Length: 226
Image (cartoon, rainbow, N blue to C red; front, top):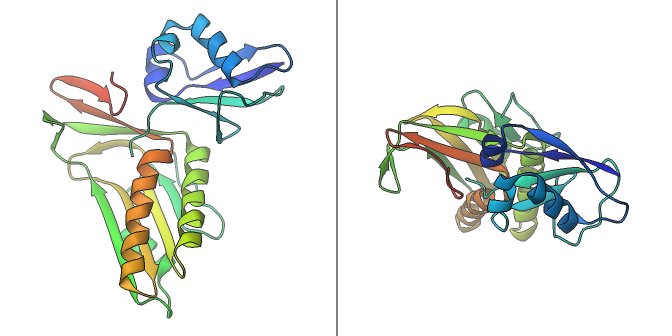
């Protein structure tokens, strides 16, 4: 069977390519695919254990059995692209153009909402003791939109009455540019605060969007290194 393998961020740079075709025997699992890729590319072997794997845009474990035609993506640690990639019925967008908090507010406003809490994430001059000139955001576009949508569904199921909207940037961002905006509404303020906090925390942990910090001392993919 043949698989399509996708590379992002640090993998794309180290390997000098965005994708691969991998042939494996029938019945092979994710563990077998990673072993074959590590044998083919030293850059993957060196980073083994520092990344997650997605198959057909879903995170999977090493025991997941693969099928002919599957799309396997190596997912480095995320940092929490592309024109707008909206999701029907929900305001979840990945954009290469400036974000709009007003759009997010409009998406969650309603007569039943007693409070709306927002979060705006901006590019700062210093990070981890290093001066930053600019950031470069890269995303696994379709999976990123899918995961942000899942997070909205997940958090709204946990918090009665809550409603969420989110936009995230890709591409080059200068200091002071806005990288992410979130609006969370709920009948009461406590739930709105909780929903907004949960969204940014889980987004930075689970959504395949990567951030490269570029400064006078060089460039580094946040979470994994250059």
